[in-house]
Image 1 (cartoon, rainbow, N blue to C red):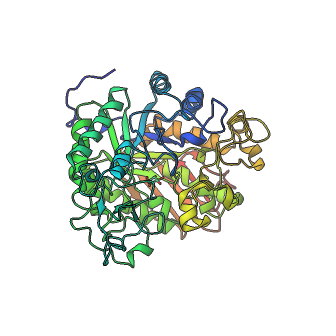
Image 2 (image 1 turned 30 degrees about the horizontal axis):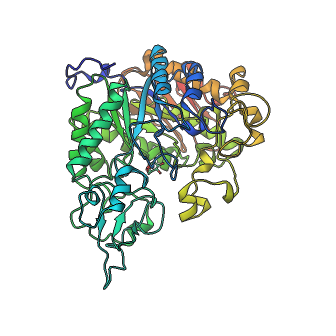
Image 3 (image 1 turned 90 degrees about the vertical axis):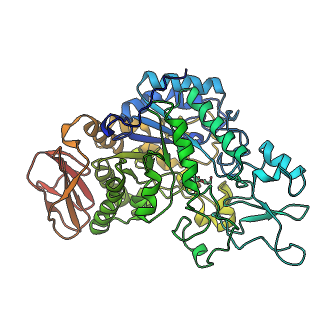
Length: 527
Ligand code: GLC
């Protein structure tokens, strides 16, 4: 299965498949359930590959499907080189890769180097071993402060809320930047590095095309684990100046990952890096580090043309400084669905459609999140139905389950073809009946039809070539940019009145034009 190993570091950007790729994030638990247990699985995904081919995406990103007690839905991994029985088997994974490749769809998978599950054999043996032992050296065990070590070693808080330290029966504490069931690994330990390299090769040898590196700004910790500024803890994690993240030592780890990937032609890695400062972010994209870095600015920007223009310009500064492709994303499994972020209801849908048209006009790689192509909104659910650890530690308003509900495929009532059982792992709303894939495929005006058409144009139309943009003058509350080389024009209207479009032939619009004008909450492409 292993492919040839000639180097490819010097290939021009245009020949790298991810340069303009449309990636589609499959939240495996919620995509399609084959075995009828109410949880999505690899075989379910394989049986739905025809849909993804129809949608036209180039590559998939699969969220973790490894053995896990699911304290954080698979981001707590007990064995990184196996498949959890809930999701299938290694045989199912191989069949999925083969089938996807035969349809010209690449497979990229999530790796979680920052931490393991507390049920990983390494952590079990660390718990059984004494302080100072080699077993404990794979994690970050420390003595506590205070007379009897009763206080945590420092004041760090977990990204899910509460202290980042948990005390074990012999009195030591271990660090977990996320849930207590996700102990942080000690990346200074060569054994940790060697094991991660083994994991990379294990999946590369099975034919994967790349990786999404979870918390890619998190693995290296500063010497001495100094206290954090308590004001930082109230802000989102990943802010520059937060000692928990973005320490310089992390780059050496990305170099290690890149060295391995360079042995496998046409494979890539994208980092989940919540670092706001463009120059700090650009450091992850140096030629011997990651190929792509997630850019979450679009997720964090409200529906306002001026703010969005600033976001696009700031995002493009990173590829300009590094030569790496830009990346764009409007949603993922950790954030609210865009329809809800933009206010929900019919207006939320209109705005989400407009933003899809803006995003798919931009140069670089685009990451879609499963269900956004159906215009799904967050699902209201009672706190008791929530399974996300963040809902428990920080409160239900922080629960991420609202954007992780299983997808509606067909039929008129839950589970809408997602599963054979109505007892899906999160309840599915009956109001999704008009939004199933089946209904939307038949309707030319549906959000799914808009995405299909947009993805197809983006891939086939010559107007989408080139990496540079130029901005037109536009009325207040609107913008228009042009792809310099190809000539595609994209106009967005976030104002309250219809606007006259720039001259040209309209290729696509997110809402029907009104008397030839672009209505509010809409975007269009012209050539
Ligand atoms: C990343 C994942 C998130 C997970 C966390 C801890 O941010 O996207 O879902 O909870 O890492 O692994």
